[in-house]
Image (cartoon, rainbow, N blue to C red; front, side, top):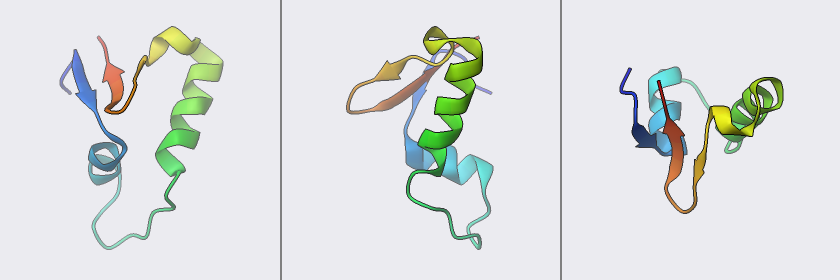
Length: 56
């Protein structure tokens, strides 16, 4: 939705799940790992201490 933006795990959880759903603490990391495994690690670069860079 916002290319070039760095998003944290918490921000990605809020966009993906409703506030009523319980989310495991590492669900976002697991999903990003799966995407990066299929598309390559450059598909979603990690910004240490902040989150992930969502590019175009």
